[in-house]
Amino acid sequence: MSHDTSAGEHLRQALELVALGVPVLPLREGKGPFGNCAACAKNSCGGRPNMKSAGACSCPRPCHGWAAASTSADVVTSAAWAAAWQRAGAVGYHPGGTGVTVVDLDNADAVAWARETLPATRTVVTTRGQHWIYLGTMQSANGVRPGVDIKSLMAYARWLGPGEGRMIRLPETVTTLPRYVVPAGAIASSPMPRASWTRAVAAGCRHTERYVRTGLDKGVAMVTGHREQGAASQAFGVARFLGSLHQQCPGPCGLEALGGEIVAAAVAVGVPEPYAVRAVDRGFAEAGIPVPSTQMA
Image 1 (spheres, rainbow, N blue to C red):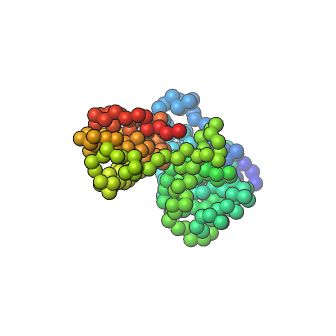
Image 2: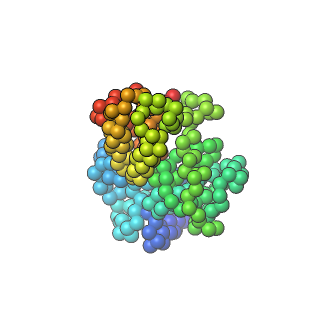
Image 3: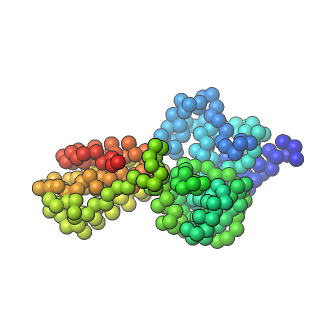
């Protein structure tokens, strides 16, 4: 098959997906997105509005990887995308924009782990392993365990066909995987847990445990509801509100643990941990209750 024929097949496949409402983008021969154009190089344009660092870029080319994925046939067939399709090696799509999460299993060991650990769902065979596809979106994360990546929000995946099997709702066994990602330099067997709020850490709090826990759970739900943007601002607001509830307490109220849970919620939807920590600390401070940093080792 000639390169021109391959390019035509990729574009035809992309248009079929667009007709189904799937956001698509061309991928290079190496299966990665095409690099940014000169105007977008090094993100000098500020990035697209739907990226984590939201900008005003409206470049017509397929720049910014997953953020360029489109469900518009006019965009996909535009002159600005034509050169990329001529050199494309595959079709990519944005799982989060489709409302799904892909558990990318990169080798036989990872597939065996999934069969033992995760509930069965729709499966797509890949070059070296499988994609397990669940209905629902979540934070994307690489290396949640050896050979396993999560591709959903703010990520792309290679389109390899519709797969086989019935797709099920995203289970907790998948959504909890990113919290165990080990930072570079840490000991692999010792992930960094965050303490949960309990009465034991709040001996001087005048509120009941149920009252505090209910407020915290509602606040965490508000933070995790901002999966595309605004989670850091919401974390600030939740910390400020919860802090204000404890202004009249003799203390200690265990606010470090409360803050840790808010930070963990923000990180779970893609907020970099330093930003989440800063937002929560500022929220507590504005409530008139400065606390030690919520960052935990």
